[in-house]
Image: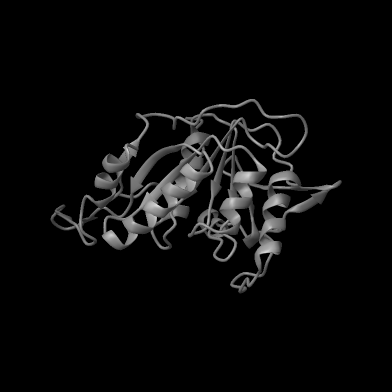
Amino acid sequence: AGRRPGPRAHPGRERAGGAGAGRPALRRRTAGPGQGRPGRARGAVASAKGGVGKSTIATNLAVALSVEGAKTGLMDLDVYGPSIPLMFGIWEQPRPEGAGIRPLEKHGIKLMSLGFLSERGASISWRGPLVTKLVNQFVKDVLWGDLDYLVIDLPPGTGDVQLTLSQTVPLSGGLIVTTPQQVAVEDVQRGITMFEKVDIPVLGLVENMSYFLCPKCSERHALFGSGGGKAEAVRRGV
């Protein structure tokens, strides 16, 4: 009783590394005065590789924290492929409020995404300066309020969004998402290196799509190989 409904987790996801069970070990930091540092703890969910289920992990992480009673926000910075509106089934436009923007809210989670501000299915073709401006606006102008956790869904790669975010707001840590095959793991290595270069601790590595569970025989099938994420987590000491 009293639990808020939210997107459900799916089978076939194994934890390859990171902190212990329960609430993720995001190190709490005291928020600075005014805006610009939303959330007492801020965690970025990254992959450096597209199509590995990063937004699904970010969504389920935010919902899990909210269900536990934490005041949670989810910032969608996947500028060229925002998925959070679809994940939460919400396509409204945020309302301006004074000099800021009031985030949308669903399942008790405060939400902001470029997908709320553009037409559904619209192609976003922005150069670096515009992307940098958007990141700054989402961090400084959105009225996040008093949050315990801010989950940030990053785009694939190691480009403008990641660098701007690391320079704009202190992050408590990053969560890396991969799939088992080597072509994904190699990109993940670049993502971990990026976090290390900007002094952001890697909290864990999730190996998504680890297996397909047959609905008829309940047998596991490793469609994308197996163990790639776990091996990388061990190799990097994550």
